[in-house]
Image (tube, rainbow, N blue to C red; front, side, top):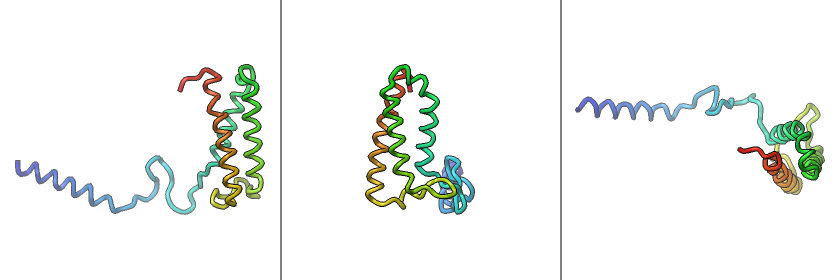
Length: 128
């Protein structure tokens, strides 16, 4: 009985000892750590949403053409806002680099686009 309690205490001590160390390499979820790692920004999400929308447009066009127009207008508004922050080599400036007024406008445009995109599964009869 005495040995079992001792093992448990030692096991806890071993686990606690490893908490202070930072692992090098990957974070939980596979993201890379440290300098030089690729930055993931919200702009990638917009591009991914646009690609999915393009793939679903033929099916959406037959069911709700007004929704297609609304989503296309939403993407156009976001693109117009982002154009001022495009980098010459590709990509965009960090979100924190946006002026406060531009940030507020972009948030509103993204919220509107998100509401339009959220309607797509229902229009197509998809279950989540």
